[in-house]
Amino acid sequence: MLEKTIKDHALTFETHPKLFSPSQIDKGTLAMLSCINFTAEDKVLDLGCGYGVVGITAAKHVPPGNVFMSDISETALKYARRNTDRNKVDGIHIIHSNAYQNINEAGFTIIASNPPYHADFSVPKLFIEKGFNRLAIGGKFYMVTKRKDWYKNKFIAIFGGVRVHEIDGYYIFEAERRTQSYKKGKS
Image (cartoon, rainbow, N blue to C red; front, side):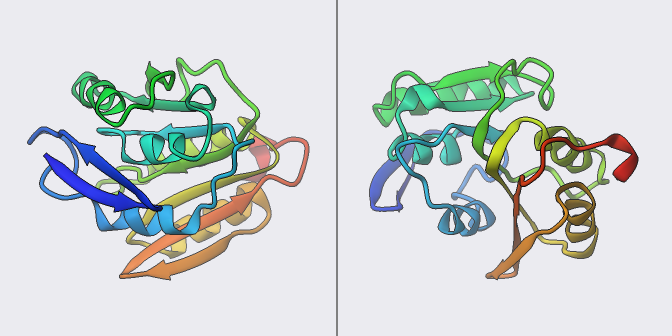
């Protein structure tokens, strides 16, 4: 059991050895959350939610019905469901999905992700490219990694710009959707 106060809320998470960061809440995730200001009007997607840290934190500031958590791992989703109950944030939408495949929603004001980035760039590339059109105009995409250049260039290519925060050795990318559409040829 992990206990942590995040954004002024005492939260408890049950996790599993097969999940990412099972013995402590990932420092990169906490750094990313420190950059996000949730409002009651937000519609949030926690993309690659793991055991639910980002989505559950969001649901403490946003109506839980406006929070969507997705992951490709059934084990992650099992623990995310347990943790929504444990932290009393009923109503979060928990979706089994490979990236955006089973997510029918759009118009998100926040998409947040701590993607797997240790192997290659295929997963974050998909997250960024397909995420652009899932955001509302003015919506923001947050992503945390330990690498800078490729991500910075990819966000600039898709969003036209990006703000990079460096916290504790992590890079948090904050990109805002300002235009109507992303055209595949721009990447």
